[in-house]
Image (cartoon, rainbow over all chains, first blue to last red; front, side, top):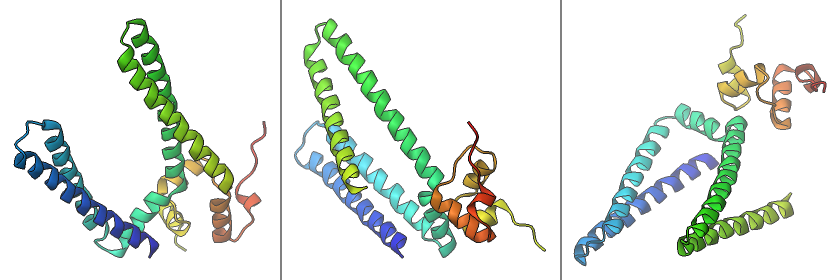
Length: 138
Length: 55
């Protein structure tokens, strides 16, 4: 029951994606701007929304497919793999960006280095906040 | 008597078949909740199903 609610929420989010995407695309044409980024982003949102809606109908075909999807999403091994992948991504990202900051600074590209450094700092701050919250909860 | 398949067991304890395969191969260590569910399903104790690995 709870999982069906979750699926419904995903459907609504997909509809929001499509609406936002359409607004971005039509907005770009309406104000006659050459901003490709906004229309491309809008197009990506529409595609993402359509894929999500398609997935929703594939999953909710019958009770068996819902159960199968629920198991796939709550399976502890899958969750463990997901967490390991996230952890590895975080470490690799921090290491790569840290290295990039040093290299860019050496080549006097301080502006880009500064923004990368800010993004790394933000990520670390978010990590510590999340760590603190989970520590309090358990 | 029908033999229990990995798929049957997976459905009974709400995990994927791949998790059962990984457990059998010793590639994945079950959580306490899963260990208890499996023990309940087989009507045995957790120690009958799982044991600590000697260092």
